[in-house]
Image 1 (spheres, protein in one colour):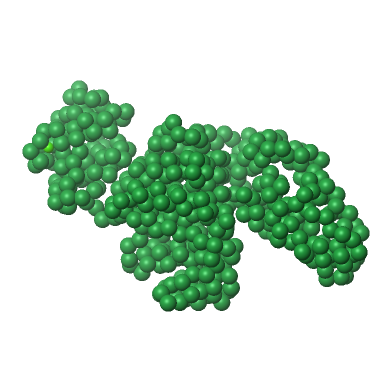
Image 2: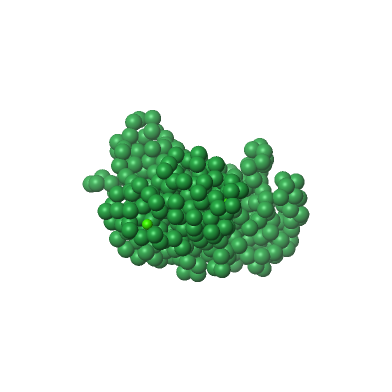
Length: 495
Ligand SMILES: [Ca+2]
Ligand SMILES: [Ca+2]
Ligand SMILES: [Ca+2]
């Protein structure tokens, strides 16, 4: 980046849809030496319209030394010029990311990306971002099916408390921080701890004074506050706790991209911002996110271009015209929260959930059958629960029960997947319990929700009072399937 310039046309276009108060421009110390009044051609106290934007360009250009009346050079031989602060100031006041990027082009910082992919398919997304980097920025790719992590010559088994303990203690952090890292990793399901561990290594480098990537992408299926896939489960909360454990490292993250369904709303955003205190921009999805291979790469490329450099503005219009563009939610420090869906009132959000409660209950019992996981009243119920939980004004004491319903609803929508996962994981335990009770177990992957519930209730009635350990084990697993107990049914049984 030897030189950077802003063309006149670019400057004028950036101010096209905005009006800047002369008083705001003059109050900004970065505008020192620029005669802003002279650009207010009609003396109404605002810089507005193409002519005045051009006049402001001319006034800034008086400080410029690039020899052209049609460009402003903000960086010369890698060093910021006298006009760079003025360009950055106009960029901030006009919420124009292009001007911000060029005005700050010589400032320290990087555009490197930390990419965490919880599905094998997300590999292509990381590769596409990496190809865009092409020497300008690096992509660190995180995600594996391995539950251990190797740092230097040491390998830590993160499926055990002792392994997490020695890993956390190896990061060169004060004990209190190492304890928090340990707790955060341990709070995550076992199969996503290696991903958190890889993130911890990077954040610790930042915490200890090093430079780390400024952009973070999380990609995978997303439900119930977790990114998930064949590489495991990554809990939003565990990741946020990890960031809080290393605040200096977390403060180097400026841009966040959450490539997963139901990945973020207003309430979730508050939690991400609190965990990453220097966040400038965030990108997420209301309900549906495009999957790897069918749109995720496009959105990630658009996001990458929009967040490159030191910008504080991100607009939803970036995604206009792409698949599921209406689902994109963005937030930026200077542009605020942007979503296609106005939040409405809390009472309305509650009423929408109540509206489909009976449909959920009926499908949960098996009385009605879900034929399409992606639409219908149970999908609406699930979406509306997510919307309700995304509200910052929802009382905290109502959350646990609603989260439980949300987490049951997603498992009910994908019951055929869940029953296959159940049979593959617990089929042996269930068969042993049936045998001990003198019966033959059915194949639960082949039963409808209604038939499975009938079968389970029958088994529970017949074996009531049994003390046989094999029977008791089967009873526990079957009860979990009937109740769709979120803690006992991993989300990545859903494909
Ligand atoms: Ca004016
Ligand atoms: Ca010039
Ligand atoms: Ca994993």
